[in-house]
Image (cartoon, rainbow, N blue to C red):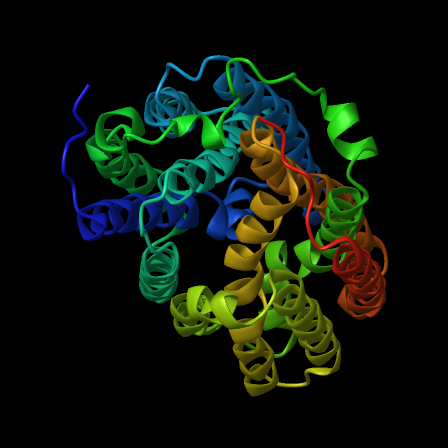
Length: 408
């Protein structure tokens, strides 16, 4: 079969549309989760439980979809993503159309968010297919563009919520997700545009299939990185979910929350543009070490913030947080696992963040209701420090073995 000629730039532009529309939909659904759920009568503990439940369900969905993609490599990833998006839309439509009691709202909202979260790993797997098939596709600027759009969207939504109400969030989510599905379906199939074996990012037909247990027990670097990521998200997830409480603590409101989210996401953009260039000069593990150090600094600044400007300064540190972590982690994990494990490895990275969020958000909600914000933030920065130590051990281990033998 003759491969179609499609330029890498065309793929990048299309992928930028996928990323941007997805993160806008994610912003509308979970970006203001604490505000939206509070408007439905949820307490902080119930908000934390809902977010944790979402993460638990996300883990189950991600394990299933990543294994499904590995085992059914004849089905394009974009089709799997589309089905998952449609299921998320169904949950959003139920929330919008029906006056659900809190218990039922918890379940439906969590399931919808879990479907959304499932597609994060699949989006990473989708772009890495092109990279591993030998195409010169840039992951950095499409992801950076999505951060810019997310940042501007956060500011605009903050102003709209302040002017109107959180009720505008769900209709916007459904509208944006329709655009996202259209962008996903426009992505070219890897088998149509590359003569190179596309199984470089999926389970190879004749390779020995490994289980999740074998992947983890046979790859100490991967295991250490996943542990570091879990601990990182335990520490930093409560600050993200309850950012509205941090802003309120220093005298701010919905507008200041939107500005904080604008700063947090906006400063990520230049880093995401530069990360692919940095990866040519520095090891992914070293970039990740800088990212973990920045997370520690950010959490300490939030703990000590006494004014809105202090919160804004902490948000500015995000230029070195997820801006580096988001892309470097994708390439790092892709480089340390064997062919036939790559989709599942990306899913494990997302899974680790969900596991951390389960514990972090559950603890965060209970602590907020029981002890207040300051004790919570004090514990959070210490936990993130522990995550940095794990990442240091991971980097040192990887530097000693440099390469993982690849199997045919």
